[in-house]
Length: 91
Image (cartoon, rainbow, N blue to C red):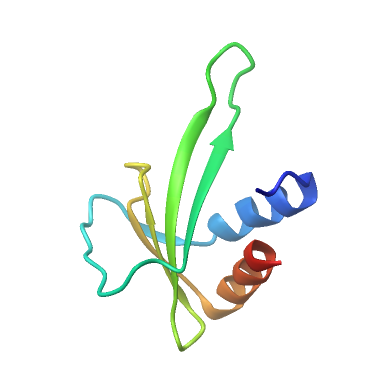
C-alpha cells in the first residue's frame, strides 16, 4: 500500500502519459506484473472512485496497461515513464 502523497502524485503523473485506446479489448498471454488499485476523491461529499490498473512491463522497457475505467481501457506507456512508474511501484 502506498500512502505517501509524493509517490501517489508521481504515479498519477506517469499514468497521465499513457496513450489510451478506450473500448479496446485485449487478452494478454501472461498474468500482469502489477495490479494497482487507486482510490480517487473527487468531491468530499461523494464516495471515492476506485480504478484498477493491470500493468505489464515489457522487455523493451515499455508498459501495457489495462484499466477498468471505461474512458481509459487499453493503454501503452513509453519507455521513460514505464521505468519511472515501475521504480515507484516496486520500491
